[in-house]
Amino acid sequence: MKKIISVVILALFFISCEEDVVLNSPSIQGKLDNVFWRAIDSEALLDENGGLTITGFGRKQKMILHTSSKNKGIYVLGNSTARYANFESDIDGTLLIYHTGKDIGGDGQIEITEFDSNKGTVSGTFRFNAINDENNPLGGEILNFNQGVFYKIPVIGFTD
Image (cartoon, rainbow, N blue to C red):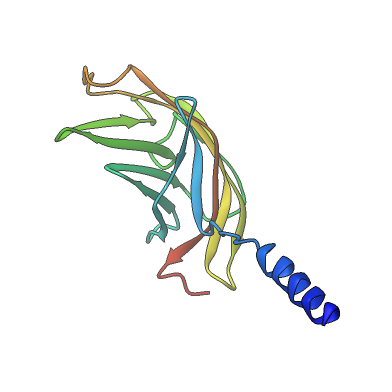
C-alpha cells in the first residue's frame, strides 16, 4: 500500500512540474523610445522590383521596414527612397506618422540575416530614428526604435 501511495505522489509531482512554453514565432519586436514593443501580427511582401516590405501591426500602430532586396545584408536608412522605415500610430483618431528616407532625414539600418527560400520566411534586425515630418504636435520630433528583431516573418506570395 505504501508503494502505491508513493507512486501516486511521485506521478502527481511530475504532472505538476509541467511547463507551458509559448513560442513567439513569427515576431517583430524591439524598443520603441526605450519601451518594449511587440507586433501582434506581421507579414512580408516582395514587390515587382525585388524589394522587400516587412510590416508589423500593433494596437492602433503599424511599422513598415522596406529594403531594396530580399538578399542578406545591411540596408542603410535615411538616404534612399528604396530603403526606409515608417511608423504610424493612431492617437484618438489622429494619425501620427514618422518616416526615414531621402529628403526626409532620419537614419538607421535593416539587416537581413536570413531569407529562407524553402519556408518563405525572412529574419533579421533593425534600428532607426524616424522624423515626425508632418510636425504633428501629438508626438515628439524624432521616434527612436532600437534593438529591433524580426524573426521568421512569412513572405506573402513568395515562390522559389
